Length: 289
Image (tube, rainbow, N blue to C red; front, side, top):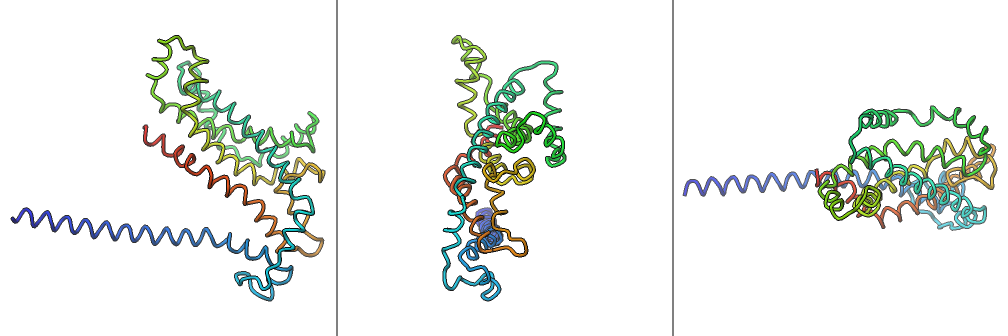
């Protein structure tokens, strides 16, 4: 009886501790949610104001009245042209990045050769190179090859700077795939190329999806290279659209907020649609490892 009472007491203590831990976790989760949503609330609320309403009503006060002309003006000034060019640049860059990184990660993760650790170490070292340090060399290179002031000028840097992290993550992901699968395929007559295209790539879909979302967001929001390598209005991408609503002596803040709202929406929708793949890709390595 004494042992049972001790067990019951320990169980009650553990249950109380569990409830306290959950309460603390939920509290901090709510705090983080508020901190995260506050900028979005600020952006959306102020996108429905007139230019000087922010000074009169306050930035967190509901618009009175709701002013929808900001979005109409943004669309009339060619927002969808900027949007389409960003989609082209990000889409082509992601396709090239995924192809190259998967081709590089496969031999690094599945094959043994003398230069393997050295190549892998160099790729990891490239992750420490600051992206914007290369602005001037890339500007000169882009001008020399005739890509300056075109969408092609952005694709190269976007792919190049996303490759080290992508290869690093994808190599680690492919290492978790059991080698017995390939060995069974080899017994059935599968060569290296068939194993890669019909076994490893399909099993790496979660990792590839994670890389696509992670790199897609950074490419979508990238400003420095786009501002340096593109000057013609007909070639500018979405991050540069803000310059169209900046006056010489003043800025139309609500109009800029409307642009930002429309710019952020595609990424939010993309994340909502593919969030299960993102989480699965981040957790699969931990589960298999």
